Length: 149
Ligand SMILES: [Zn+2]
Image 1 (cartoon, rainbow, N blue to C red):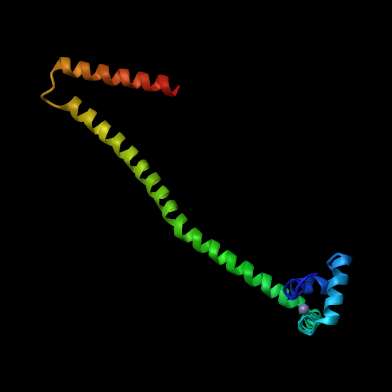
Image 2 (cartoon, helix red, strand yellow):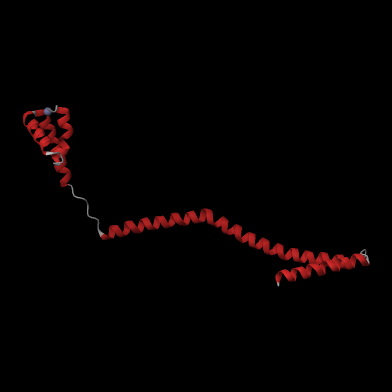
């Protein structure tokens, strides 16, 4: 035979008829003879019956639309914010890098041409140095053309 504590632990399962028939019979017999457990069962019964009566609210279509639209809106805003936080500096950096490289590339080319011109037109340059310089430049141009072509 089970004591009151054991019976009380079974009352919810008993209510939902989720215990095997032998146990069910034991609980029923106990409830008939024990006022304390019977009172507890009646209390549980009342509460659970009441819970069953509570209906889930029916949501209107407009509520659903507003709700989902609101959530979507918030998610989009969050997404946009996260874009702003990390993407803008990256885009700016890439743009600056492209501009820097482009300008530097052109500047380097101009500097190089200037340097070559200065070297070739320098009055201190000797004839051998000049011919060496021309040879070097000619070789560079040939190599460059070979590489490109
Ligand atoms: Zn009892």
